Length: 229
Image (cartoon, rainbow, N blue to C red; front, side, top):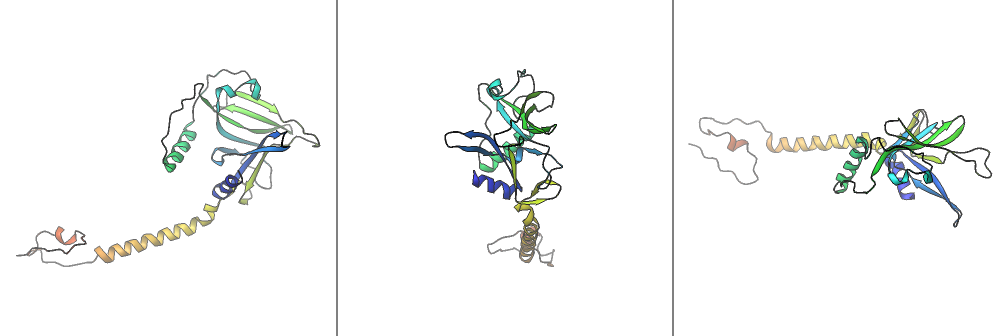
């Protein structure tokens, strides 16, 4: 988890961490590192200004949408499966990893939704809505823990290089983008120069003697014999 936290922080500029439970046996909190690609933060939040809401575009199995997990009784007549953004993200990741994009074979299927936290009247709620923002699947108030004066949002964000007014911050790739662009430009110029030095000279030939110009301009690493009258 710590490795994933560091990787997301460097690669994306930020990494959301959620406290989702408490292990009574070990007496420690249970945390998970959320996917930055699915994050929908408050656009007015940053490392100085706390967020008023923070959501994630996620999928849930239908059997998870039950009273046991704090959901209301809702009809499953809204969009199921992955949204276009989720499907594109999964496809790109699978393509990069050399994996095949498999169709979902889960018997009860998945439902796309937005899970997150919202501040309402100075109180934090865990809220889930469908992708059309037409149905509230759950809205559970965050309880005050022993020793705390007020309920706290169980979500924190780690930034690599935070910026004022930017909920995402600056990633490691952002910091080296200009250097990578310059190196790429120089590499391309060197390649063009090498190609010109090899193939791009200006030459004059007697078209009456050599009738087929292609024999002259076609690149070859072998010795070329060009017939002439």
